Length: 379
Ligand code: PLP
Image 1 (tube, rainbow, N blue to C red):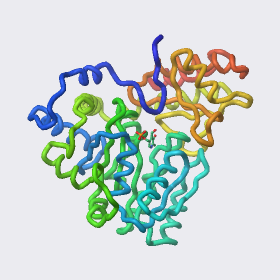
Image 2 (image 1 turned 90 degrees about the horizontal axis):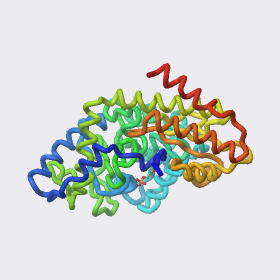
Image 3 (image 1 turned 180 degrees about the vertical axis):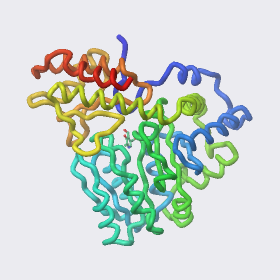
Image 4 (image 1 turned 135 degrees about the vertical axis):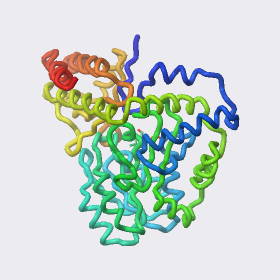
């Protein structure tokens, strides 16, 4: 059976990238590998839209999230955490582990944080040294307004904005330098179209100043140590050479295509997916700023979202269910990276079959048609 990976991480990897990763292993201190790292370092700057070095770690995205906390803050510091989903909660958990005192800005799941609330909290407590947020909160498929948040933190010399863009970077526009985000964290297995295993973090000059005074313990995820190594086209410890070869291939491809074209592709698929589920009589779970890289759908009354996921799996299609409080209530379909319109149309067609099987009557083809109309118009 063919497998269609329509989950918001991991996502499919192209045959060209797979071939790049089928090459013999290079030694990580060899000149050949250092050449690869030199190229990758430049192309990562293009992807992050920054002039700063983009740090690379053999880890999943959470590793870089942990490093963002442990390299910039000290025990006893205060941070504001935007908590509007599973990954917002992760920022809070990480801060707590490092003895950071947190102010939690709770956002109802399915909604985006209001920039004015962040501004108010920062005004009320000038001791807040960092604001932690997701660009794309994958558990709710909501995009937080990080551009507006950066406008606020930019004028505060003692506060940095730390953005988890693990499911966002490469998926839709997030120009780090132009918007003034201080730390952007990413992971390989989503819109970057690679297998899981690489984590990235880029820091603004302001964030690098915070690194100088940070007293949290750190060893593997020591950003200053990694920066020094990367400036010599090395990594501090053994590089994930195979993944880095894949990274080189994918970044060259992204650069050749151009970010704008990739963002437009994802947006077009997103509009088609959202039109399709609405035509099926379903509602989006994301009430504010629905994501360009995945669509979260409320399961219809009487239908368990996890069953939708399980039934689609029997047909070879892997989508994601809800997490934590959304478990059973929603299902999520990704449309980022190496996912194309056939993958999406097939998934939507199968979804109609599965919903009927589960007792929610939907006219076969109605959602697919709505998607086709968008794809036809925006071809
Ligand atoms: N943050 C967001 C927004 C995510 O979507 C994910 C993964 O789904 C993570 C963090 C965690 O990333 P990882 O599983 O790569 O550690």
